Image 1 (tube, rainbow, N blue to C red):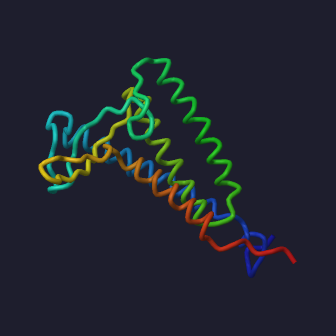
Image 2: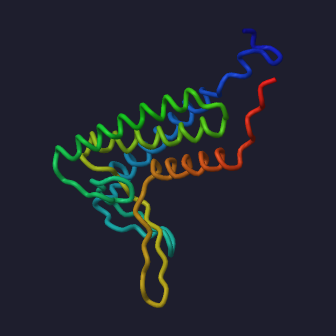
Image 3: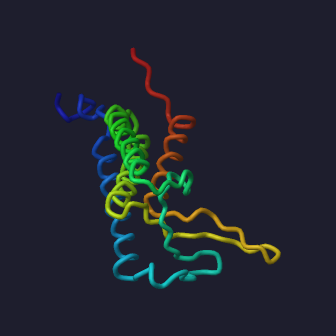
Amino acid sequence: MEGTGGGYLTAMPPLRAGIIAAIVTLILDQASKLWLLNVFDLGRRGVVKVTPFFDLWLAQNKGISFGWLQYDGQAAQIALMAVKVIAVIALAIWMARSHTRLATIALGLIIGGAIGNGIDRLAYGWVVDFALFHIEIGGVTYNWYVFNLADVAIVAGVAGLLYDSFLGVPAAKAP
């Protein structure tokens, strides 16, 4: 079990990288939301145009991904939190058993994002979304979903898992 030259420790899954990805994601997500809500006071400012195609806009997302299934009731919020807790536990088990650095980091991103949005749901009763991309074509404005950094991490994590599963290096065969 020595950590030198091809021993057991070098073959262990890179769990530390996944944990770091989750923690960094959580910190950046919560810091951005706290700053936008309490320092920048986005709720009072309304829509803040950053570029011709990107705005900051406070959206209170009471539903699930991309604002689907908007529920105001306390029972619905508790049910969504229960599903989130079960999902985070399942993802953490998957991350602990992962055999590639990319999959482990991807799972860490998803876990950190899920926990970040879960903290919002507990603290505010809704998820803080603030980033809005849009484009105007022929006088009609087309908006993307309003999202946050946790959502970006979750999407990046899913993309990483897809890449790892389809195009990643296959595991070495046992002798």
